[in-house]
Image (cartoon, rainbow, N blue to C red; front, top):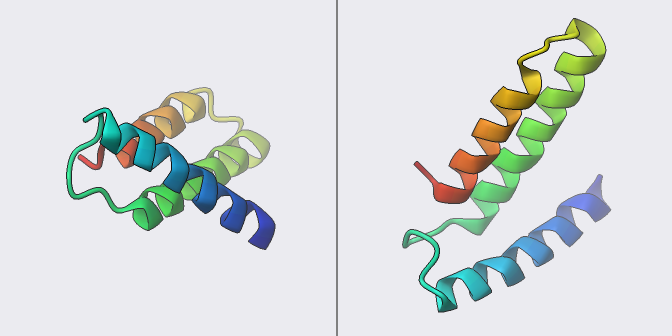
Length: 72
């Protein structure tokens, strides 16, 4: 988990820097918050699929990840 968190944050920060250079992200953009929300959506999706067999879980997780990346 720690490795995923650290690696993910580094990768997201690199992607963030590229997106800022291309004016693709709202400013200010909180990389740490976005990473937290993306990982939380992934864990929620995993739980929903394994425990609840929720057919809408993927749609909800995708929407949550999109919101984290646009910070709306």
